[in-house]
Amino acid sequence: MDINGAISGRGQNNELIMRGDYTSATVVSTTTNYIMNKDGAFTHTYRTYIKLRENGPLNLKFWHSNAIDSTWDMGEIARGSQLGGEWLIEAAFVADGGKTPSGDVVEGSQIPVTFAGHDTKRVTPGEKFWSDEVCIHLPEGHYLSFTWTISTSSPEMTVPYNVEQMLVTAYDAPGNVAHQESAVSFTESDNLLVLPSYIGYKKDVAEHIVFLGDSITQGVRTTKDAYEYWVARIAEEMGTNVGVWNIGSGWGRAYDTASDGSWLFKAKQGNKVIITLGVNDIDIGKRSAEQLLTDLTTIVSKIKEQNPKAEIIMFTVPTFNFRDEQEDVWRKVNQTILTNPPEGVGQVFDVANVLSQAAPNDNLLKPEYMSSEYDPHPNGVAGKAICEAFMSWYLRESR
Image (tube, rainbow, N blue to C red; front, side):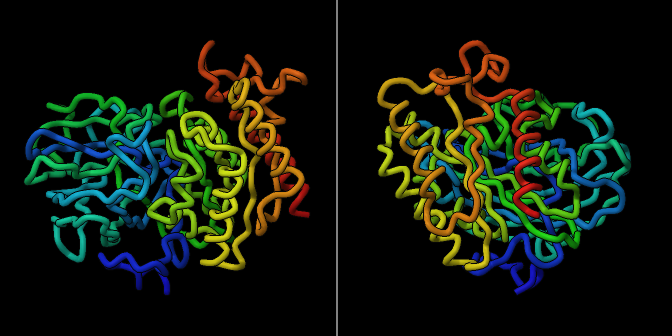
């Protein structure tokens, strides 16, 4: 099935997102880890500015999965694979966002995004659906602006979104103002990334790589709009002949993916999948080494079951200043990944070795890679180091 054959709301398991004519247009992760839970019905507009991998004349399509990908915190509100509710897309537009993401768009540049020929789209729980193709010319150095108005008719849980730190600039406003070119009534969003699950553009690429991971893969704690996290840097080094879809999700864990729901569905779309999971399983998930390794094995087997030819690269669990029992689990899991990785893993990259201090303090992140004195999320400097080490390893292993 090519990508055009998958335009439906039925969301069959064999739907192919990144194959055929389209590949991901951005390295920004738009995975979901939370859900809107309002006291009443609402109508609200969201405008987001995205740096695309290529500019110029573009044929874009948007795909969406109305489900939560990964668990937030302990899952009191949002759990991995939980379905979204019912909601309505009242209007959607793409536009030239200009050189500065300031809340407005270039005058006269807005183009409606339609769904099966309609300006509106009613979304049902768990639905997967495509937009129609939209053509836009985006000058070099300019952002793509995506704006849509979403409304609900009930106070229950409705729209999944990403609640982590903003890595791109976005704005939101009450009411249906998607058509509005100016920034009037819009305020800058905080921890509120409301975007389609996949922004694709028509592009023939050599391969489709999916980066599956948690906030470290997503790029959390790096500078907004800087695209300095390691996946963005690797994508830049690989060039646009290689498709890259970042599905890193803040607070995500391996057992979310192993449940074979919406998040793993996305991972299955790549013909090469790079897996970097385990930090949150060890930390908030309090998983044993055996449980985590079982989940990683399940993830790999499910991907290979969908596509036996899929290439799997597994990263060791990144360094995250673990101590005591958590350090023991971290060391055991990484030793196993390095010496006896799950069946189906073709290659292993030791990202922990890049991030760690010298032994015996190799459980600790190098100070210069810390995003703050107390936060071991890798910063942009670490992103550069990971990219350089990975690309050197990757090119050597690919010979």
